[in-house]
Amino acid sequence: MTRPAGRVFCLAKNYAAHAREMHSEAPAAPVVFMKPASSLVPPGTRIRFPGHGTELHHEVEIVLRIGVGGRQISTEHALSHIDAVTVGLDLTLRDIQRDLKAAGLPWEVCKAFDQSAPVGEFLPITGPTDLDDIEFGCWVNGTVRQRGHTRNMIFPADVLVAHLSRIWTLEPGDLIFTGTPEGVGPLAAGDRIEVEASGIGEFTWEIAPAEPR
Image 1 (cartoon, one colour):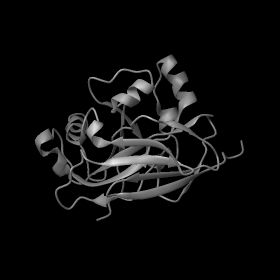
Image 2 (image 1 turned 135 degrees about the vertical axis):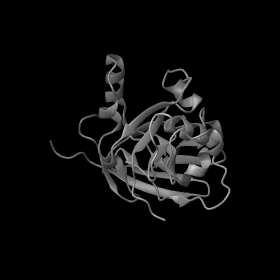
Image 3 (image 1 turned 30 degrees about the horizontal axis):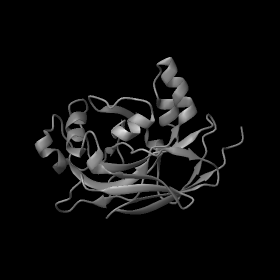
Image 4 (image 1 turned 60 degrees about the horizontal axis):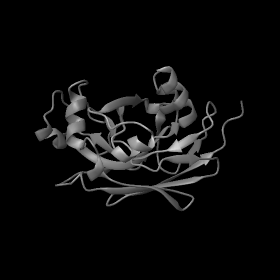
């Protein structure tokens, strides 16, 4: 069943190796930020290079979809609230992020711009599915950039759902970008990005030049 997308929850620093490559410590609790619906991009769409920054980076992630809403969900029952899974990208303007971090300012400008969340087609979860056993990766122009495995998440899927539901009432269609492994890197106009996850599928996008200013 196709569901309209709801809110887009994103996790930062949910892989220890990525935290290290960003010169940061692994968090003691999930680090959450959000993106608007305008950030979502279906497979095959050309993505405009955002004109307000210069260093666009790819961050491949496993994405979960909430099928059954709820609040104060226990970790024991959390997985039953997920109805589909896919793979996507958290596109980040790294130069803008550095400036925002240095000033202690929010991240929306570098993380939540239009087309910043390319997302693949969702695979419905119809039976037992081990969300802690998904291998995934990102390729740019045919060269592998990132490889990850969900068993290396600091906070696994059940913990993320339970944590989010203690702050927000989760609703059907809400998406959870679960964090990226190490290997993030730059993108340029003309690049072809491919993401793939075992048992889920392969999805591609192309980076188009920025709009004239």
